[in-house]
Length: 368
Image (tube, rainbow, N blue to C red):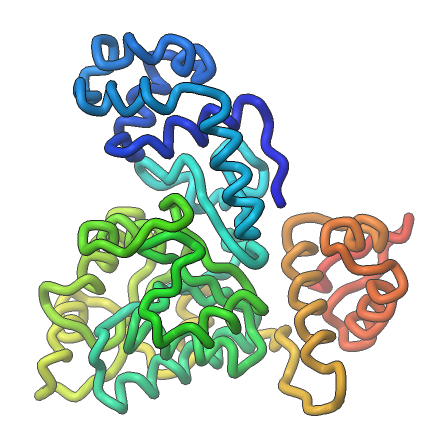
């Protein structure tokens, strides 16, 4: 599991306290500048930080001990949950730039690179059959081009987005309105497991947190915050998807929509976006061209031979690591936990396919 610094321990502490949330977290940080000092002087926080109430002050006092932080870290380790604070270099830069980004993310699986090419797909929990199919096809085509697919693992459109990415052996990330260890909705248990094989399940909520209605709008700003472009499928006029769209627009993200049955009750969101001038996309090429992304077909194509799934997963992990920086085979082995022998085998295959190229000093980079 992720090692955290002493400073990050206090980020974890403050962010975990009931009622604090990102706004009060950053208010406290701006007053104290050093959260270790805030930890030791927490009795004074309600007096010094105007947004923190006396009730929240009581919760801060009750949790201000090192053993509390240790127990949190032990819980995460036991559940194989990574702790990623905003101080960590692996924290997605694209998310760090939004207003009041999550101070701490909890995730299972492995974290993709969102900063270059990531697309969120959102919409109704009860789409039409055609609406479901359109989103699944879009996600499939985009994932096949190496675009990270982001959604919320809810019923309907979210499920279609994740399934489409997985169909293409692509990379996908689910942002939950509950703990990263909680499968919601329960019927998506198998999907949850498949997502962990191809990407990450992410949450800003503590492990074990059960879903509540008020958590989902909060979650939605992360869905839009992790993407360069958001595609809204079928959805209602006053829906969670509309909240995510509004969040994306505030964050300066590109927003597209899809064709729909104009008579359907779930056509209201696409129609609203069309009236607002949002581009209508029908396939992955429309999105790629609209974003100025080169079509390069980097994702592994589905294979059936023995060991193909393992090879596809390694290729995807290596590709996403090399998107961040040039690395040697040894560094890739260290990052992935895979043996040098297996890493070298995958690197050779990727070179032959033109995905990467070797550099002096046994380093590799994406073939541009």
